[in-house]
Image 1: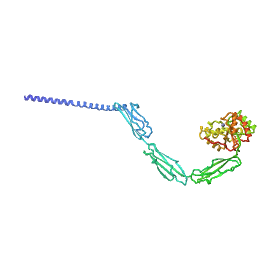
Image 2: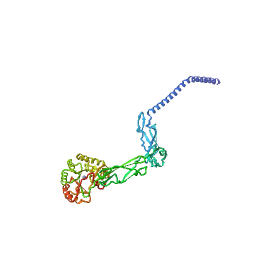
Image 3: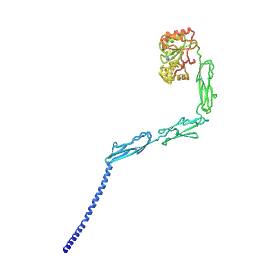
Image 4: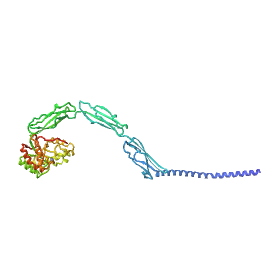
Length: 494
Ligand code: ZN
């Protein structure tokens, strides 16, 4: 038994040895196989990473913002989206971007706008911050001027100022005023610390001329043969005391000879600012009561003016014609040559045109004045306004035009003449007998009689001879209007 056991044990040992031997031969082969699997794994991993990077690089979406990611916007300035791109696979698809957020530029604050895109795993997001701030300086406005001249003997008294901010509103109370040598400095800041600074320079120098006021105006009419009496004047100055006593008057008036004379009033203040004012003194002929001035407007005109001239010639009466640009030159020439006075009534007689402006009036007047000068060789300086100086129709075209014109024509050396007896031939009647009645009933020995008539009317033409004969029979005399005659005017109503 034991022999067999031993044999078996020996056999087992042998087999064990053999197996060990076999394993010893087998193990190097297994080792090399496991190293190559690891290698493959690492390579695959890196490949995967590379592929991922490639796909990211090529296919992942990317939002790109145009302009800055932080924008500062002024209060109330409209926010304008600067724009953005969405790049997918090298192409721009901005319409696919979702934009969230709003900017209210009417409210100061911080605003955020989000731009995003997502598809599957792929996602891109950007943000933009917008700050709405008050960047505008307050406005600082000075009453008066930035360079203020004051009298040398005075000190400056503040004329006032106002500060307004676009966001804070009225901040006048926050203005700080500092006085330096010859200037004042005004500083104001709004709550956003925007600061405005301005200066007012104070210059001690009198640059203002004195003022001379003439009593009773710059135009004075006196009757020839009566002495001129100074109407009086006053001179004042912004810095000096009353200067009336220092006024010098220059100029001479021949009170016996009708004409236009000028007196010059001048004065200087202590800073040598000079003022000069001119008074025009018209020495005029006294028209004696009971005198008749026949005046004919709107002509000349064929068939009427020529007959009127015939009648005046037959009766040896002189009249005044206020002409327009109507009719033939010969009739004006004849009237002038036969001793009648030629006055100006405007070229067009068109109310809407001549009363539109002072400039229009004088342009029109010059046309008819030039016409008369060409025909007669004399500059006529006597005027009758269409509708008279008291007309109200001119209000329709320009308020106050008659007030301006009546002053300006005198300043320019013209004289204007209205009437105190209207024949009624332009509107009231077309009957020669009626014209005769109106005129003869209106005549008076207690005044001068300036009669308004129109040499364009046949009924006037046809009543004239009888009127003249009546006047002569009743002791009236006739005269013409010339520039030496006293102004006959009505009350200006516009
Ligand atoms: Zn007229």
